[in-house]
Length: 252
Image 1 (tube, one colour):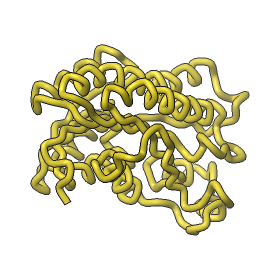
Image 2 (cartoon, rainbow, N blue to C red):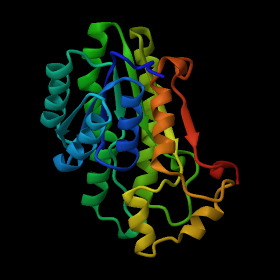
Image 3 (spheres, helix red, strand yellow):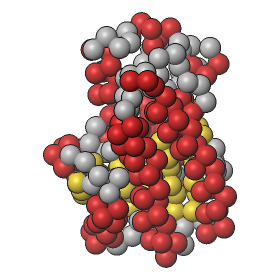
């Protein structure tokens, strides 16, 4: 299916995990993809894989918490591809520590990336989308937006709650300008962050599996396929909502 043919997408945090899987899935549906990541080598690795599969991709280094780098990222997309139709605000970080062990600096850094980063990226993308008649902004929230888990970092949970609130407000504000906004809310996914937490003994895979009806952790490609669907014309009736992909975690 090539329903994203002639569309241009930016995926932040695209160097690995859900971001890389989403970038690849969007490219498979025909989109030209700007893979943005704070680590250029990671972004280039994903972009190279897309090009090797016959797609169009550009790697860009960008820290989403820095306005200048975000503006340059959007500028690179326009310079290379001439338009911007899709923004997947996927970049984010997480801590494995209790609230009382989280420093003020860590709190500020997490919110700078997880929340302010989405604001800056959206702010830069909106005029380009509006100029051509519309677009789609997909924000990466979390199952934690609805169901915080015992031991989950408070700053992370708060940031993902903020993402959902921002998504709803953006959807109301931007719908009259033909910009559709929604969120994807993944459960535990086999990303580098999750793998690191399991490797360090913060949580075991059996403990994660016990929280879900599917009895397994999601693969990034599964979440990436959902993200690519949500930004496609097929999903145009999804607006302002958070699409939960958590293996049943929210109802267990």
